[in-house]
Length: 424
Length: 146
Image (cartoon, each protein chain N blue to C red):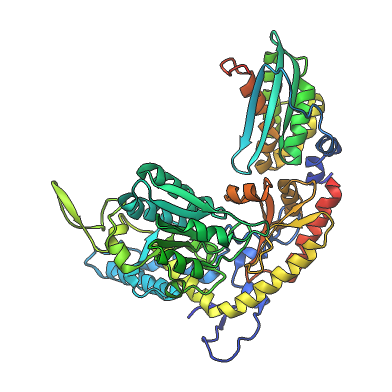
């Protein structure tokens, strides 16, 4: 069980969660206590790009290299056996985190992007035929769009997209029309990285299954904010990345339903993914090994498992309650600044505030905020179709995590007001 | 002066508000687009040539204050110059915004020297250079005439 601020974390309990002690959890994140080049305390509000890592995660990685490092699945010696057991234990940890029926349904990848590319190149390339359709949405991050463009080009399948409304929600009537008998896959983001919108994935997955299609959910932006249960969502694939849930970069996860994975061919060849190899040909290992060619990011996988321990010890309910409060404050304080237009105002949102300031380019707002010590993202957020749909080139995006404070929201609002003044 | 004030000098703010030569051009000889895939900014530059001399130049597009003001000041700086002279100005400008040592470039760049503060913000160098890259493309000998 990880420790929070040096004190044992309360076990998951039946009693109502006490509010989050933000000051205490911040002591777990050494990076947050720095001062920026402009002399302000760092206000890190770019959590949708990557989250910071608690020292428990940093120490787990360091501990592995200090005392546990060996390659896995091959050594006959103690160190390798330990590393293998830790690695496979992490697989079980991840399976529990998202409600997978078995650890064999968890494939470790390099990133969420690679997880989606794996499905596109293995399942998609072997299954899609001319005339088949893959349905995405206009809200997707490029990583859940471009892999499908590539495989559609390779197979002759057609890519279609559910449009979005002015509020930044999916057009569900259009989705209904677009989900047809030719649809073989619905590939949909759980939460929009650019807008924060939470999509009704469960209902859409049921519709898609009714049409005989499979469902892939891009959970890169949801895993750190929503309770994930792949059985309840009803998805066949679920992809997320370690570094957006307080774990390290370099590791992603693909959940695939056991029977679907079992029917998929390998997409990369190498060690660890084979059963028998002869010069004339080879046979493949069962999933998940079939999809894990080469030495995996062992330390990163262990770091991810520790991050999930940490995250669950802090408690999703407490995290969600505090993030909701941060979003409410930010929406209020930034929203009331003259010239600000909020972009993405769906009622179901995670703690992401995307906005534009009248007459001021988001990059310039970002630079002024940087001068206040506030780190935000400015641009199209790797979701250009979202920007095109809404008729804007870019936005400023502040995205919050449970370690953010009210003072940081105030610094954000102060910086936006200053930008309005400088460029007014 | 704080570094932010060095970046956003008044001349830049003023050119951002009222950019010069901000128009699509009829009868241009050359036209090129500049895109920054990182931020989605894009602009178009139009050029009229009289022999080797840039007799008219204009731009349009979306971009931040730095790229807009840079495009505006660029059009003012290269109008009436030869292709070769414009290329030399760009080289000096580029050395200044990337902060390469050993150049007295800022002193020779006239009004363009207001972009010297960009070198303190590595992520914004592309913003200042974007219009110049588009102009360079438009002027390159193998670029098709419109």
